[in-house]
Structures are given as structure tokens and as C-alpha cells.
Amino acid sequence: MSRQAKLFWFYWERFGILAILALTLVVFSIFAPSVLSIGNLLTVLCRSAIVAIPAMGMTFAICSGGFDLSVGSVVGLSTCVWAAALPTLGIVPATVLTLAAGALCGVFNGLAITKLKIATFVATLSMSFIIRGVALVATDGSKQMISRTANPEAKFFSQNYAVFGQQIQLVQLLMMVLVFLVGYLLYRYTRFGVYVRSVGSHEPSARTSGLPVDRTLIFVFMLTGATASASALITSSQLMQGAATLGVGFELEVITATILGGTSLAGGKGNVWGSLVAAVMLALIRNGLNLLGLSDEYQRLAIGLILLLALAISGIQELTKEARK
Picture 1: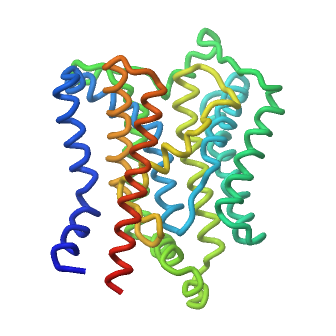
Picture 2: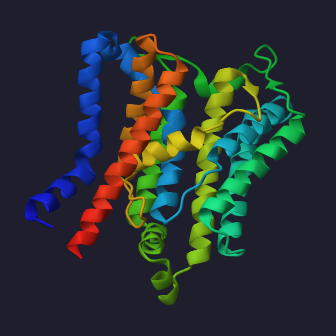
């Protein structure tokens, strides 16, 4: 690989997503200038939390050499758990129970992968059907509505607050910031982060070196499940309901944000802050297309094309690395 190519990929891994975000802003400034208003940008930033928070967990999953196709089903199940538990337990126990439910789903994923030796794709895909099936059976396929009159605290995660004269959903914004700060510290400064990168780089070598591979992978999927449940708290708070059908296809958007953010699909290298920027960019695209009057079908098409672009860039990068060897 030439020196110029090395420099390009060096800077692309660190700043590529920022360049794409800047290009997105330029495009919308031409076709939908209202996108760039301070109020709208703050709205986009807050709304990005729904994808960004599970994207942080997915960053660890992909960095470890796998991915989690069950996060959409975990979202659906978690909204049902929260909607059912909130009226009887109160907001704090219901929130803890919801996060625990997501983490437990992650444990089952991790055990299927590490103890039963099932391929990540098959294990998480199977779990996605099982989890959504459990939610459908438990709720009899019906929505679990939350009464705002009886449970005003249900709006906690999506409540608007006035900040510097702008109405923003402050709690979910703070949740997103906190999750990414903790995620970055875990990735960058802990043994767990080192183990995740080592397992993703070459799992057999990690096992030979005596690293706790199984325990690391189980914790990774616990993290992915818990962050999906955190996203479900925001979703359920916004919609004032729980439904097993929520989150269908959600995992693809989360994976798109993670890969686009610079986490290598081959494993061994993650980009926590890149996942955050990519999630914000996806929320910006959805918002901009909505302001242009384009329906959800076009928004899904755009997300699909972006995922294809992200996979193509990741594939080209891996090919250039192989050529260098």
C-alpha cells in the first residue's frame, strides 16, 4: 500500500464520519435550510439518542468480532416490561427491571455463542425471534398503554425542558452523553476494553494467551442488551406504550451507525465517538427528509443505501490491508 493510501485510511478512520456529516449539512442547507436552525439541530441531537445509545453497545459487539441482531427484539420486549412494571412498581424499580431484562437477553446470547458454540449470526438471529415471541405471548400481541394521568412520571425520559430558550428533551440527551462517556472509558482505559480488542483481533490467540474470552463475550452482549433496553425506555416514554412489535428492523440502523462510525466489521478496532457522530448523522438525515416531505419509506431507503456505503468502505479498507500484507 502506498504512503498516500496509508495516510488516507489513517485520517478516514478518525475523521471520515465528520466529513460525511459536514457534507450532509451542506446538502440540507441547500435543499432544506430550516434543518440548520438551532432548535431543529438540538431536536436532532436529542432524537439521535434512540439509535446512539445501543450503537455504543454494538460498538463493543462488532469490535469483539461479532454483532447482535436481537437488539430490535430487545427494544420491543423492554417497552412491554417497562409499561407493565411502571404502574405497580414506580419509575425507579421499573427502569432497573427493564435494564435487567435487556442484560439478561444479552446473557442468553453470550451463553449461546460461548458455551453452545453457535455462530454469532445464527445465535443472535434465533434469539431475536425468541425474544419477540416471548413478548408477543406475554402481551397476547396487544399494546400495553400507559395512562399519562395515572403515571405522569412515564414522560420522564422524553420530557421537554427549556434550556437557553430552547425546548429540548434533556434527559435522553444526558443519558446519551453519560453512556458514551462510560463506554469510552471502558473501551480505552480498562482491561475489559483490551480483552474486547484482543478477542476481536484473533480469538484463538486470545484464548491461547489465557484471556477470559467467554466471560468477555458474555459481558459484551450484556452491554448490548442493556443499551437496547435504555433506548426502549426513551421510546416507550415518547409513545406512552409498550408493544412487542416495536423495534422491527431497528438493529440494522444501529449496525449502520456503528460501522459508519469507523468500527471495523472485521473486529479488533472500535470507534466509540464515531458511533455517536454517525447516529447523529442518521437522525439528521431522517429529520431532513421528513422536512422535505418524504415518507418513512424513503427514509428507510436512505438508511439502507448508507449501510451499503458503509459496508463497501469497510470492505475496501480490508482489501487494502490484505494487499499490504
